[in-house]
Length: 294
Image 1 (cartoon, helix red, strand yellow):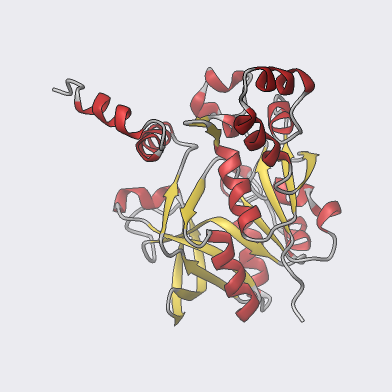
Image 2 (spheres, helix red, strand yellow):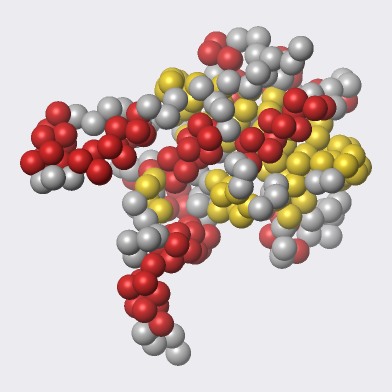
């Protein structure tokens, strides 16, 4: 029997250098997409996929993340009650009740494998999910639920797949060489981390969401620093694959990828979500139509 996926690790310890000076004191994961921070969309995806425990790996100046997912303080409650804004209070209270939140401070060298290793004491001997805290995929059903369904059928490692439309963007992601299994599920033969467009083995980025076995911790400890002297999660995954652990990708259906760690993509995300917001869409659409974009 495969163990149920009940935990997700969300790395959120980066400096957010692309958004400086905004992120000097505010976590990039807390950048607002209309009226919710980016990381809340990530947590909502996990909760809607059946995840019970959310482990957020943080660093310096990240206290705002903990405060956001905490229960509202008494002063805020009194203010909202006095203003007859109970509907807003109810929305805020639900944030803290989405999951059991656990916070860990990141230690160790640079690299996206380091925050995964930091979560080992909390994960113990269980398979678990990983979602990055500064990006998300909005899909129906949720991306992580689609991944869990694949894991429950095939086991191994499962990585979410995103089709990259522009060839020049391939160098921003880990790109997979694939062997088709069924439908939108593929077995991964290898992953090339940030290849040049001409070196990319496909246009499928295996990126953003992972289901990993507990053996990943041993693999992360055994690999040597890779590109840029960093500890790369993909290197540990490739090590386990070479040792016989199957690796699959599911190309997410009915979804859209939002890379909110990139300034241009972040602005596109805010505009798109504002156009979908029931309280803003009409007025905001008219505002955009009235802009002189010559």
